[in-house]
Length: 327
Image 1 (cartoon, one colour):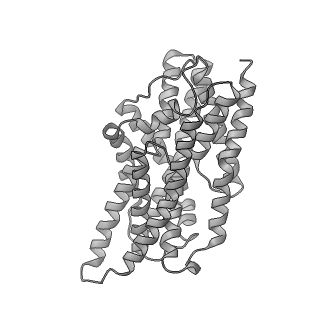
Image 2 (tube, helix red, strand yellow):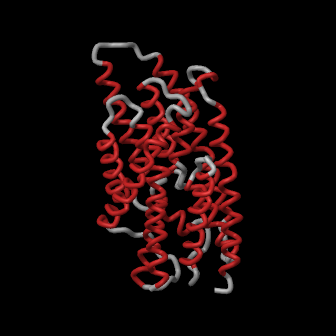
Image 3 (cartoon, rainbow, N blue to C red):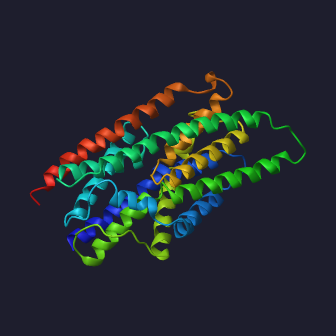
């Protein structure tokens, strides 16, 4: 029973922190568009998290449970819990030092490190694939943001342009929410699925097949959106004014760039960070108007946090995994 409670609390905390980290970035960026309804933005995100996995499947979620370490061992669920807990600690520690980072990178590092420390087989090929796609996604977001930013400057003005730009914003934001639910958001599905199995069995065992009912998905979406709303002002400020977004078309270009980069990563079968892709898209859009439009000090700070997240989570996960061996 103690393990069931522990897994349930970690899963609940993980979903809430995902909302703080990822959801706030999505809603905060969308809220930079004039006259955007925060309630409407959150509602679209909630619907995407509930509906998209049923259409896209749980393929990306299975990367966390099957392709990083051999969690089919009888201690697999304990190792999984260890890796996720390490990821939460790393992200919290870095955030408190003013270094916003990627929860996805932290989970990948934490799970691989915990598996290594616990003596399980770690799939270095699978880890390499995930990291390669994860590195390519923000680069794609950067390039697409730059290209879309340039293109937006060439759009001629017309009478109904404000309405057309607003429609484009809703389409781009909706695509971004769908991309998140099909890719980055599936780390929550993996964590809740493992926790659900432990709660049902009342003891940890091997990690099984990822599965969640629509009702549980709705609960995940509600907790996630609560986390997003609690931090949307702070995160939106960082991604907006902190990296410079001056015009409505800048917001649309960033949303479209991030959605395209993350959607492409889903076809590659690897989880990527939506937060990284959004930040890279912002930088690309700003750079399309000249390098001086980018506040490079903020960019360097975010980049430094990203670079240290994976090795830090991997090392901490390995130490935690080693400590588990007597168990």
